[in-house]
Amino acid sequence: MNSTSIRLIKPSDGPALADLRTRDRQNYARWLPAKPPEFYTPDGQAAVIESLLASHGDGLTWPGVVVCDGDVIGQVSISSILRGPFQKGFLGYWVSSLHQGLGHTSRAVGLALGIAEDVRLHRLEAHTQLENLASQAVLRKHGFTSWGTAHEHFYADGAWRDEVFWERILAGGPAS
Image (cartoon, rainbow, N blue to C red):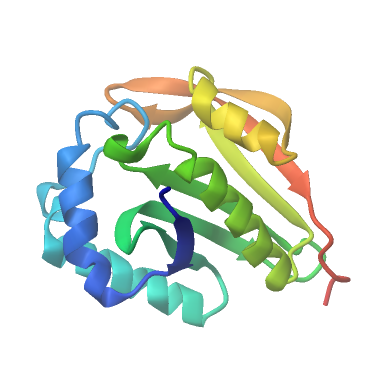
């Protein structure tokens, strides 16, 4: 059986992420914004990782990778962390097309919920495109509820896309 785990991203993940993103570039064009060609290179991913880790050091994000049997197969993050009266973050995730349909995404989201509670968030939010039924099923499985649709909210693959907004209230501590 394949095992799924998540961990904080590290600089040495750049080549693996570049390979995955290059392989799935066309598969994910519908779901992700366009990126410059250098984004798909190990150096481009190294720059992204450096920025993510700097943001993590400032407490603004928890950038992770999804790992199966020791190999990086995707990413999971809690970003846009707001403290004070909000205590919330934004959940994002993707798993390589070669590893979809095997439960890795769902297990990664479940593990990310534990991270959100560990960093004492009260609320976690996510967005899915209206047609992304698989991602919506993952969020529902983990107790997220939809709270609205934003029309023409996100531009990808040459068109404005509608998105469903999701939320999950956690057991996070009081605002500080």
